[in-house]
Length: 417
Image 1 (cartoon, rainbow, N blue to C red):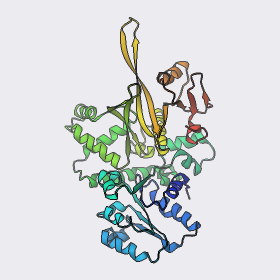
Image 2: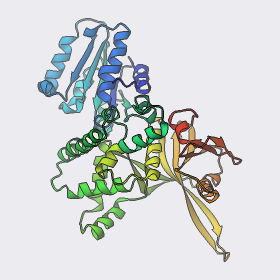
Image 3: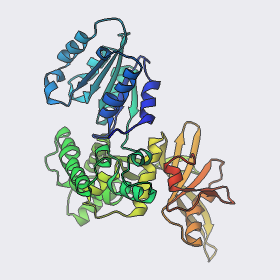
Image 4: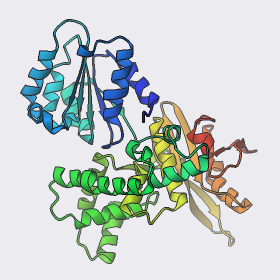
């Protein structure tokens, strides 16, 4: 089944022939190779680009093991460039090549070489790679399928609620989305987490005593959308698990999970004080199916899953996303001054644009509506304020100018945020 990913395809075309190395990053099995080797390549062929000018090398394939040697890879590519017309060089999982930066830099000054590479860890975003590329590396971050992409291949008819429930449970990895049997989905996700993602982390960072790492993954998976920090986690391990793991080790493990694109961190932001607060933070899973598989599909609380889903969708749309805090000076019933902190789920920034968003799975009562709207009403700037609500209630704007946005209107882009 062919899954169109026009959002990323358009990004690649917008960066074509820009003299930079196009680095396509993202977690394993999220569709990077398919985007490059199928969708982008087919689009080039449809433009009339000759097959011989599209050079594709999958470095994850054992048959190309010798090409993981940088000199042999250079020789192979050079041997395929035979004239002065443009060649599209596509290298899949290039981090498997030793000194891959040198290989890529070798084509920066080749006028008829347009280079595209994929990679599955944050090594591509690190300072040393940026230095090696001399500012000529151009990242395209690919995520698992968005809900709209998932819905385009949904096999259950036009029932959006059923599709959303399936997406919240099994996530958006393309292989999962195109597998019909639930048993097959679960087996794939369980195996992928253990045999690919977890194994990659252990091997890459030479982790021998891995019980604490696995426990930490379980804790983060169980507490998506909850405030935490390495010190708090250290205390939890000490009291509950009788483990002596340190906060520094926990911080490293969280970094490894972020490097593998398994999780992302949202930092706390004081809206009125206009400053970042280093701790605590929230962590969200890049793919909900993997998160649920890690917990054997036992913890599927819709409130937390919806919050994670909204975070992922905002990141796909290019927003940087923080966790907001609004501090109020109030008086209690005895007239004593108190400081009260209200949370805003997401402070979303893109360029000069900002949006404040609350995730509300359900607002069945006036009390619940007041609770969800309270923090947004306390923000005294003119940026857009939105509550994304579950269920099928219609989208509307209330008397305070706050947009109450139906989850499907948000996910399918019916109403833009």
